[in-house]
Structure formats: C-alpha cells, structure tokens
Image (cartoon, rainbow, N blue to C red):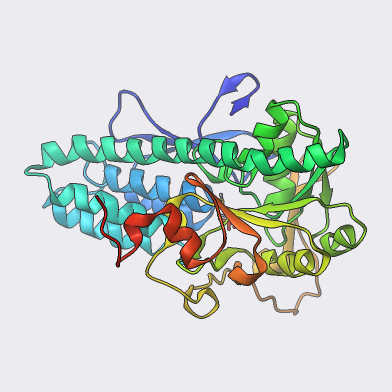
Length: 377
Ligand code: MRU
C-alpha cells in the first residue's frame, strides 16, 4: 500500500545489513508514521507482545524474521550453538501472543528449515530466504482473498443498482495486520479499485481502538469512503438495513470453521444472523489450526492488562497525544482480547483458494491435502 505515494509493506529486511529488519510501529498511528529498527529476537518478541506489530498474519511474518535474526553474526543474540539459539528464539517468539496461530505456524516452518541446514552459514542464508518467502506468500494470499471476496461485493452491488455497498468490519484486518493488502479489507480495496461504490462501517474496537486508529487511517489513505461507529452500533445498523455485508479477519480458525477474532466479533455475528446479513471471515491458510475443532473450548484467549480498558489515548487539541483514565480510580478492568464465533453463525470463509462454507467439509474441499483420509496424487 502507498503512504504519501510511497509503497510500503509492514515489515521488510534491510537490503544490506543482514541483522536488521524494519517495521511500521503501529502504536503512534494515525497521528505519527514511525518506522522502527529491529535487531534482535528480544526486540522482535517485544514488538509483537506490545503490539508495535499486530494482526495474525503480520505476527507470523514478524516471528519469522525474529527467527532469522536469532542467528545473524552481527546480531546481539550471543554466540554459541546456532541451533540452540534458534530453539530458544522459537520459544520466546511463540509465547508472545497466544490466540493468533500464525506465529507458531511461522516459527515451526523456520525451525524445520533450520534443522535441515548443515552449517550456521547455510542457516543464516536459508532462514532469511524463508522469512522473505513467508512475507511474499502472505502478500499473494491476501491479494487472492481480495479477488475471491470481490465477487461478493460485485453481486451485492449489482442487486443494489449502483447504490453504495455497506460493509461492516471489526478491528483492523487490513494491510497493517498483514504484510500487505489485508484479509477482510482486501475485497474492499479490490471493489474500490474496480470502481464499485463501497462504504465501510468501521467499528472503533475498544479497548485498543484498532478500528478507529488503524482501519479508518488505512481506508482514508486509500480513499475508501468510511464512517467510524461505536462498537455497539452494529446491531442497530443491521436492523435498519444499513449493512449489506460483514467482513472480518481471524486470528485462528479451527478445522470445523470456528473463528477467533478480536473481542466483539461474536456479538456482531449474532446480530448479523438475527438480521439475515451475510457474515464472512477472511483468512489465509496460515490462520487455520488443523489440530483444533471446537473453537470455544480449545482456542486460547489472550488476556491483556487492565490499563488498556481503564485508560484511553488520543490527540489533545494542543497536538499532543495524551492518555486519560475513563473510570473511577479504583475500578478494575477485564481485558479479554478475542472471542470465538462458532461456525454456525458464519455465512462462509474467504481464503486464498476461494470461498467455502465454515465447516470441516468446506475447508477440506479447498485444502484436500489436509484430509487425513484422502490420497493426494
Ligand atoms: O489484537 P490484534 O490487533 O492483533 O487483533 C487483530 C485482529 O483481531 C484481526 O482481526 C485479526 O488478526 C485478523 S488480521 C488480518
């Protein structure tokens, strides 16, 4: 995506210095655009944990680059056996955020490449190549999600005869949450780029306000018409025919199609089901956890600090970013980061291989290599 006419990804390696990776630090957005330099596993783990980078696919890409950094000779991660350093890095990176499955997926992939290497010199090169491949594959997957999801918006646009298609989205499943394009926003960008009239209802997404801060900024930079709404407004909008389609991302989708996403997604899906509004989850294959079935019982839900609920940050009239407490001093906060929407509430899934019902049969039809009973030619 372009910022002030300059194309950016959310994460990229220095073309010369092998021990240096750059990320867009998402915390100061939308008020300031900051690029941060990451030189160690510890710094990358911190960037994931403290949400300098966030969003499941980007967490995966960041973990992959963290693994590559672990064994660069110029890095500060210490000498010693490179495979041990790699395994230590895997442990540190995997424990950063528990709900998104992408970092475990990326770390396992990087470990497998490392284990197959004969020397540290070979591993240094191969791990950098693999991290870059993970990033490039994510970009391609998101672009494909955009192409497949576009069909849904085209169909609604045709029915509405030129009136804007109103899409509701939650949190930020945009290009900032991935390496580029986004998952839920990819069909929206594709529709906008194709000249279809599309308007987005952007849930603010308390407590960290990824919708207000990131999705609204992204859509604005790309010129997509959008309106910020409080998290509780979606049900009312749906009752009054003001939402044609709900499109969200996911942090982990089980093999039966249950989807963990930012807290509040489940309530939107309930409202959508009650009002006959199609509700789709967009995700790359790296977000599918084939080892789990019942998402409500089996997906670990991240619990974050209560200060994220008790305090809010914003731009004061004097141009300074300030943090204010929004509750009495002694009020405690509970901060569950995600919830699980059962497959039965989803109209379907949008993956890089196409659309499918949120069900084991639907996913296996798109990913037959994951069917334990199938013989693949
Ligand atoms: O806590 P976050 O900001 O990492 O949560 C992000 C989300 O819930 C996204 O919707 C999800 O990761 C999908 S991103 C394409």
